[in-house]
Length: 179
View: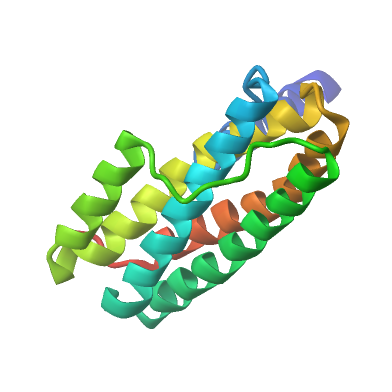
């Protein structure tokens, strides 16, 4: 009698774990760390994209939630850029974070600017999830194994900010109308 109850309990627990796993998002996996100057350029490029895309969303989004998120992205990424610049100076490096976009991010921004209003909100949030997932892997990788301790510390301080942005973007995506 005990054995069937244990088996039923184990089956129920397994089903619950599998159901929860089906809805869970995989955590961003840390990438192998970039060289310090490459990391600075990547972080700077992503921040520039986030500021510009956020400004576009703050103006064009139909959803107040998406407009608010866009404004927050623009402000928060201005702060992370400023923190990176301070870290670069403290590390006595000569690479200043610049405003240039990578070709991929420039293309995303161009597509976002051209998106029709009904699809704009969903495209912006989709892009935010994609860019933040990639950025989180890069930042975690450098924070864990980067070769410059000052820049590594700055990256580590940025991880929870990017994680919160990603969490919030996923939450907003769940609220947006489908189709």
